[in-house]
Amino acid sequence: AWESSPVFVDLPRAAAAASVACGRHHSLALGRSGEIFAWGRNDMGQLGIGDLRPRASPAEVSVARLRVTAHLSSTAGLGDRQGS
Image (cartoon, rainbow, N blue to C red):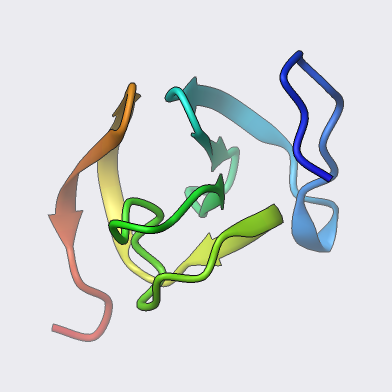
């Protein structure tokens, strides 16, 4: 279920969050080991996970990012694709 107030979220693989960025309908977490997780609305691909399906729980983003930010309906990231 979608929440309109803050809730605790478990990251996959028991990852520990170093930072969290929240938009209006989606959120991102940067793990302490550098991994990125995204969840929430995804109708414009704002989660960066390769499809347009919304996620109620965090899904790992398969791109190595150096810095990520979320604002209202958009997400921005700077980094290199893994394996390039």
